[in-house]
Image (cartoon, rainbow, N blue to C red; front, side, top):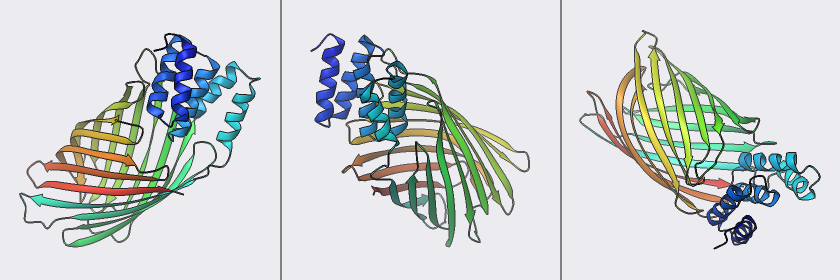
Length: 320
């Protein structure tokens, strides 16, 4: 095994050409630890990030390389390529969910959604989503639209608005906004650390429910996974305030296969009423090709003093 930066960089580049991106990322990370700021290492890390769909991370590596090596034609070429048109700027996601309820006489639920996203210049996106909910022997439809953007190389932001089509149990309207801010870069085998903020207002016939969640996301294993802890707050119009927490994680088992696990004790709104809910969830995600990703997730919710719900959600995403 190489014990110097050039050797690890070469190993990373060879793995990159073989499309073994996790192995390539690990090798470039070892080279970076031995030679911080090396041009080939920064370009390598940026290339791996771009190849695995992390355009904002790739842009950050290329920008740092441009700052240190402004005359490099390789750097200029990478930045020009990143700023150019994405060959697959569109993505459509179709998901379906079926629930089994216990400790209640309510009938089982189902949900379906279709989401269409378009990448814009830089790291910005716009999206729209249509959802159908079948609950309580009734059906509700909601339409959402929103977007994401990057504010510098350390901050990302999002916003979303949704409206219900004469809903029976879903909100009449909802607004969401939030973002992430990187507070430390990867180093010493520890990945980047981020603060997350998510806010939402949901308006029902009986009143409005506000949520305010703040979290800490810690990448581990040289970016192969992350842990995410959140403190949750839910406030209703009548002044009632419930708090909760959630802990989740994701692991890149390989370049094309990911596992997600999580648990929470969270306040959730149901027909405008906020109740404590204990949740356990787990799922997998697999990249079938550069264009297609498949998802499978199973979750159990147990609402205090009410029903228990077990549901399975499947989905497919296609880039084009």
